[in-house]
Amino acid sequence: MDGIRELEHFDRVALGAAGAGLKRSRGDGKTPLGTFHVSWFNPDSRFNYFIGLDYPNRAYADQALEDGRIDRGTHLRIVSALDLRITPPQDTPLGGQIGIHGLGGGDRRVHEMLNWTNGCIALDNREIRRLARWVRRGTRVEIL
Image (tube, rainbow, N blue to C red):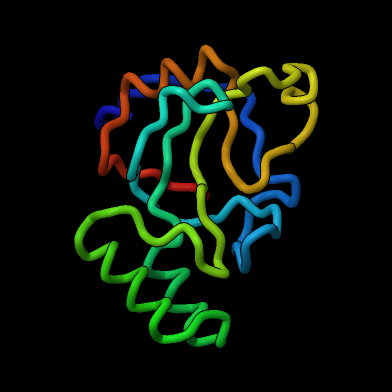
């Protein structure tokens, strides 16, 4: 969006195989809901292009600490990275490597019919390249 003007519209996106919701742990197949920011780019991804998000964010880290899913040291690593506006640790029990990516060599028919990712948002290869033109490091991404 540019103010109230829509810059791009993508009709079909695929989410995590377990849908979107509150992501609890690595490997749960959920696409996390919430507000994130673009943290890194991989133009040579096996998925054609990868736009990485700053997951886990502070809300996920705070809840996980409260629930006992992470310890204070892990929480401190996550929030310290976020405070410095760098990618939070991707190796915690909360998971990581969440982003928006293309299909790579994947089957477009599967993409059109199923939520198939491990927790990311997938577009087709042309769409991810179009999206990449609009976003920069720090761009806010809301997953609703």
